[in-house]
Length: 312
Image 1 (cartoon, rainbow, N blue to C red):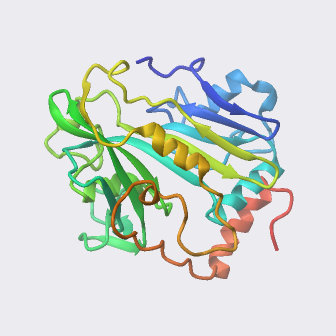
Image 2 (image 1 turned 120 degrees about the vertical axis):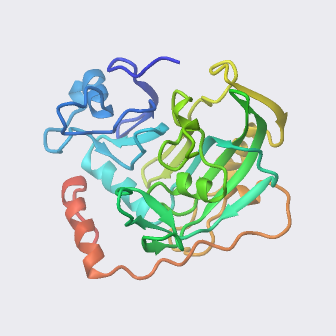
């Protein structure tokens, strides 16, 4: 597995308005800190100096975020109008994301819906981390929903592990990592929410990857499926032994799912629960309350840099 470098930048989608990169693990998207020798912003400047926009803080308009330790699909808008159209899709909950992960233990259910509310952890020494509602020190928990489909059971460095597909139906900070940890199956290599015994020091990375992304803007549908990094041929420590759900079937179903109607605030279509047989369906994501003036202010400030004209 090659370490990240300024030259090692994988592009999985390019058009006049958008780039989608396959971000390396343990690489920050951007940073003003002098000690950050490698960021995605620096990789983009090195590869595409002509695309850097001096009117932005970092030279590039990142449409969403990925954690430092998470690899995978990340969309970059190449102009203000494109950034605004992508922002509109995220705001209207029309974006589809799916992640691959290796989780500790063998999950017995084929499909799991995780619905713990997530808030900031106010406990001393746990700054910048999140927790589920009911945890001591949990502040302002918000409804959160994740769909999980088990793909394979196997061993990682001799320990039982499940390979899963995760689909977040809400977008809370660290949502997938917190939800998997709350389930009792933390992400392999997660130093923040993983096993407390020091077990997570052994993997060379956190095993969470942004696998699939679809942003259906009015001008174009940005859709990518990145390579699966969790294969025995790429990591000899991972040894799958039981196939439960073929990944290619889920990918076909994701691609075939109609884009959500922006006017429809009901259940999000295309969740993994619709791709597998099984009784019942999970509850729909919570209805988003009307936007307040206090919430709208930061959005308009953000839009003033990223779009041609904010929505009125």
